[in-house]
Length: 331
Image (cartoon, rainbow, N blue to C red; front, side, top):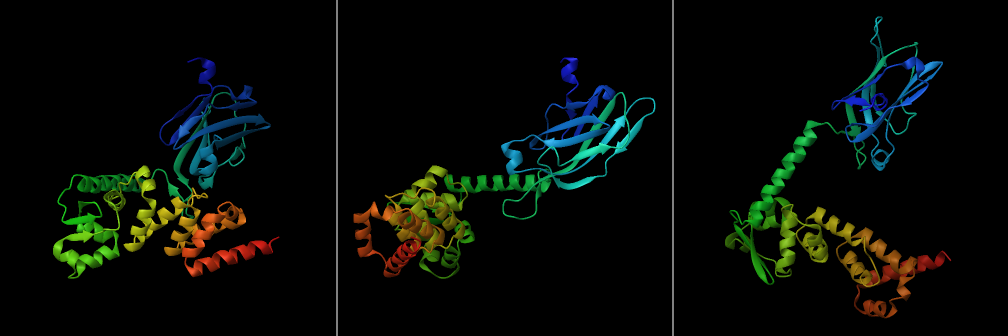
């Protein structure tokens, strides 16, 4: 490595960054090479203009824009010569760093010769996507929980796929499979009720789900056991939605609604509008209405819409006409 390149290199440990600058008196502006701490690449800069200015900031990237680091750290400047001196900036706590202007330290003394800039990170956090408290990327509790969750899901998946100690039979319309009543009861209050009372399902250790194919039923079980694949989910969304409603699994119902929102088109909009009304999915219903009325697609599928009007629920028909009237008022 050349001496010139070495001059911009920052040495790091997982939480410490150290930049050695050989001759600060000759430095008007210098920017370090990027160095990685946590999830982000960082830079240090020094600038001499009467005072010495030190800046610390993350590299501009998609990650730093969407998840800007919230940092707790301390910065020290050391002059390791014969008159060894150390200046310490007061500890920064939970400061979000997005740009090169978010942390600027005007050093109040004149250094000459060799200096060492030392940045010690105490914590790095990212903002919560749901508006909660920021979470530390170094929290062992988070790492442990993720590892624990992953292992537990792997074990559950193996219990289902390898038929380990299954104690209930699920009969679908065209086949059967095994499951565990404790897992089913833990995920669904409906299943819990079946197995808690003297019902047929408890006595026979059998659950009949004859309104689902064995393929859709397997996808349903895979979701309950935490092992459903994206392509499997997409292939059986409507069947999974009906099962989620029937067995009161709210998170699956919401997952189906979010997925069905993503690819509404003229071929499926009427079916999805009907499903949204039947299963009380307000976001899906609203999006289908907007697609039909606000974007004028109702005229592109006039024949299909007329046939739909003959079989649709009267309350849903009234809602469609109300949406049409509201749209006309805007003209």
